[in-house]
Image (cartoon, rainbow, N blue to C red; front, top):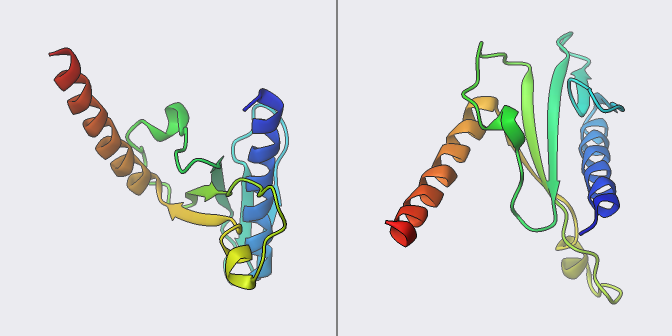
Length: 136
């Protein structure tokens, strides 16, 4: 996948998250720029707390979380969420019945920074064990 395709996929994930939040009555907006603090900001009517959302999107069920996701979370900021979005690849033919179209819908996995770090550690441990088995 080329750089431009990845950019489109990432934007699709960010807009999908903002769309789903707005659909559920939570005000959400996608942010723009290269040095932004979050991909999406959200706030509900019942809370005056602004939530920062980091969105990672993939069409392969593997997400690159970068340096922020691979470090132990500090400070316990309860206003940060990570949303991993799985967007199935676009089919070559028109989808058939509803159950087939449902398989093409984005899937969202919502994690706190602590949960994301625990998932990262499990994956790093599996990778480390496999590396040691191959290379002694």
